[in-house]
Structures are given as structure tokens and as C-alpha cells.
Length: 142
Image 1: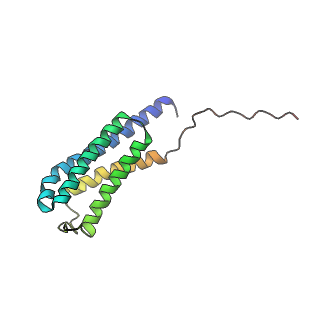
Image 2 (image 1 turned 90 degrees about the vertical axis):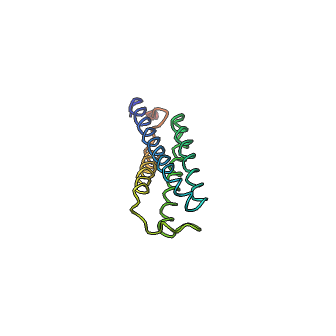
Image 3 (image 1 turned 30 degrees about the vertical axis):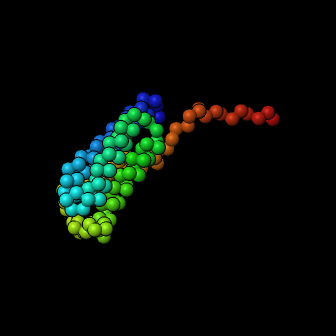
């Protein structure tokens, strides 16, 4: 793969992850007031999700370090896992959403989280180019 292709792939990956993290932040901003009304700590977790999303989006924009992408993927996985747990079993003192899978903002959030997870997983599993050119073995004298 050429340097140009690597640069384009890196830019597209970072833009997709930044968009996904931004989407996660927006959804949680919109849902935070209702979450605070239900259970304070869930509202607080929503605010934490917004802050972490924005910090990670800024880090992805500023760095090509693969660890930042891994952190973004891990964060999105955690948010998605907590969403699934809240819908399957409920959270302590918060069982209002058990079985409610058709909430529009919840579905949108799952799409954004899935985007970040898929893009980071694909990037992390992509074969890496060797940094040094391969050398031909020198022939052995007979």
C-alpha cells in the first residue's frame, strides 16, 4: 500500500471514529435531563459519557496513535454493554427501561457505538505494513 493510500485510510478511519464519538455525545446530551429525573447516577453516567466521548474525539483528531483508537473502541463497547444490560436486566435502582428496545435515541446511540466498534476493530485487525523493505537473501557461495 502506498503512503498516499495509508494517509487516506488513516484520515477516513479517524473521521469515522470522530463522527461516531460525536454522535454518542449528542445522544447522551439529549437524554441526560430525562436520566437525571429517573435516577441521579444514570444522569451522571450520561454526562461522563459525553465528556469521555469529546475527549476521545479530540485525541483521535490530534493523534494517529493506535492506542487512542483502541481506547475509543473500548469506550464505545462499554457504553453499548451498559445499554444492553440496562435493557435486559436493569441497573441498580433503574429498571424502567428493561425490555424497551425501540427507543429512538437508544437505537441511534447503538448505531454510533457500533460504528466506532466496527471501525476500530477493522483498523486493529488490518495487516500492518513492514517498516523496513524486505531484503532478498544473499546467495550462499557453493
